[in-house]
Amino acid sequence: MSVEINILINITSIVVLLCVVAVSYFYLKRKQTLTATEAFKYLNIKLVENEDHCDEIVSEFLKKCSKHHAIGFDCEWVTVLGKRQPVALIQLSTYDGFCSLFRLSKMNSIPASLKNLLEDEKIYKVGVAPVDDAKYVAADYGVYIKSTLDIRHIVELCGYDPGGLAALSLSLLGVTLDKTWRIRCSDWAATELTTRQINYAAADAHVAIKMFVNLVNKHQRRGLLWFRGKDHWDNLNELCWKYADVCFKTKVTKKVKNGLKDKESKPSKDLVLSKRYPYAIRSKPLYHNCFLQAPDGELLCTCDTKKAIWYVEKELADKVSDDPLTVRLRFEPAGRSVGTVGQYYQLTKQNRCVVCGEDNSYIRKNVVPREYRKHFPEVMKDHSSHDVLLLCVACHQRSNMLDQAVRERLALLCDAPFASHDKTKYIEDAECKKIRSAARALLYQSRKHVLPEARVKELETVLLLHYPEHDEITEQLLAEASEISVVIENADYECHGYKVVEYFLNNEVGGLLRLEEMWRQHFLDCMQPRHMPHLWSVKHNEERLRVRLSEGRLSENDMKMIGMPL
Image (cartoon, rainbow, N blue to C red; front, side, top):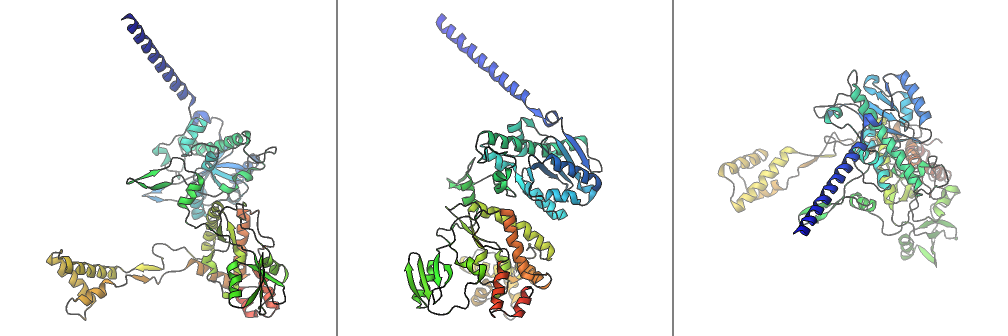
């Protein structure tokens, strides 16, 4: 009996000891967690309410962010009756704690110095969902912030679970942010900001850059960066360029199982793209690099296998060799390869992403979007393959996101708004929809007899009012009315792409050639491709059309129409 008592006493002692250890652990853990006010006592917060002060502060920012090439970024605004008001506050912070709150609600516009800083693509603006904030700033003030970087991309890259700003701050820095609804939804356009508002806004911007620098440094110490041996901050673009201005997608839904949708806690990037990305990945190479020759054997261009075989089957060409497949035309082509323009079409091209070099899967990218090119005159649609490039899924997604900023600028420049709910090409005619519904209900009634007599009379009245030439409801009338079209063309619809093309045809020096060159240069600037086809040119179409003009295959009227100087 005494042995059993001793064992019980020992077990009780162990349980008590474990409880003491657990309580001590959680107490110490709690002691390690600091509030933002306690952790960021060193912040040097500047309120900016006029342009002169703004210029001074921005100049200081440029000096202080020269090492890390990044700043913390956040925005605040007021919501009235569920409607967002213009951005009232932009918060920026450097790693050493220099933090500025730019009160746009008092300045009513964004000064040139701040605009230049926000649009400087060499400085990353780090935060949580900064792409969304940038869209609001663009919509409210016409400033297009470049190189926004969602910190969660880097968090995930370093092997941590991504979350909201408060959760990341707590897990990575041990700092608790003030996220009560009273402060988050407070009046950011007030005449004077409270001390609590100032500290909250500054902390949100600073915690982002604090985490970013710590993560990049930790990533470097692990030896995971491919530019080891160099100053990794001078080569930051090598790590971050693919995440610039790209939204972070957090959830992926699996297939329905047992009536429920399971969500993965930490999806891989490949899974995110395959589930969410709408474009089909090519299963076959785009470039077959077959050769097409003129009757005298001069190389005209490369082409795909299907086209080469078509010429042979139609007895328009003869096969010259099988490897590589080469066919020689039996007729004189309209034009031959001239200069660097012609040489471009003679070159063999690689089936790989022109940006990063990925060659396992790729998607065709229209550098000049089809929504504009489809409205071009025929003379500019020929040989448009120059503007079709291959991108991997990730680069294609990023490129399309970055294209949106150009589309929005064109919408403003050309007074060509995007389609909205009341500006769609086709709209539903409510009256016709009512007639069709009545006819279908009566057809069903004639078979099932489920409607009350009063309801039947009501539906018949609706039909007879629309068809006054009929005295009674017949099967033929019901069949006709049940198929009536309820969609009509919207007379107020204005096609964004068409209006942009019209604007450049009629108003812009350089015409459509300038629009093309704008898109090509945008692609080069924002994507910085490292594997572009040799001789690919921003001015390709102008050079091609000048060759056609010199050969007498293009009229001066055509040149004037597209806006090309003679």
